[in-house]
Amino acid sequence: MKKLLAILGCGIAAAGIVCAAEAEFPDISIKELKKAIDDKKVVVIDVNGSESYAKGHLPTALDYAAQKAELGKLLPEKKDTLIVAYCGGPTCSAYQQAAKAAKELGYTNVKHLSAGISGWLQAEMPTEKGAAKVEEKKKS
Image (cartoon, rainbow, N blue to C red; front, side, top):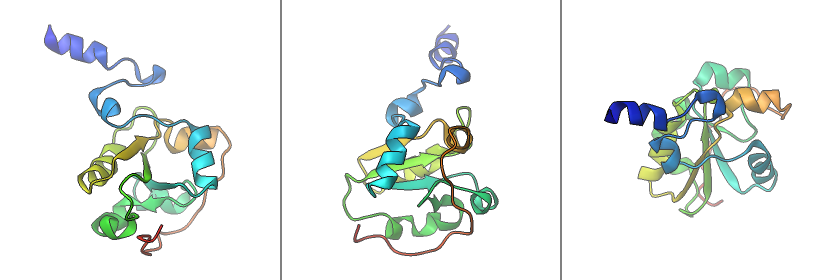
């Protein structure tokens, strides 16, 4: 019975998964994230893998697969900085890797773009292409 309740508590993916991981990492809307990117008030982390990242990612996003070893050097000093992790879309949970890594580094404002890259593209938002550039962002 407990298993059944846990499964039911997670909801249906199409309606937006509401699981413990999402309670830990609140969702951010595409509109809110676009504004934060435009205002330069967010660090975005793509967890779709380097091949997908090179084909297209959210503006300013870090390539988690290529840069996870340097994540502590790439994130800003301010621990209340908005950090947003995303992956493929509403049914993808890979974002949790980056979100948990940021949280373990002490960041307190970690969110999740549940729409993922698929929702971002569907909303006709801009993307960038190319491999990750390793540059320190500590002074942000």
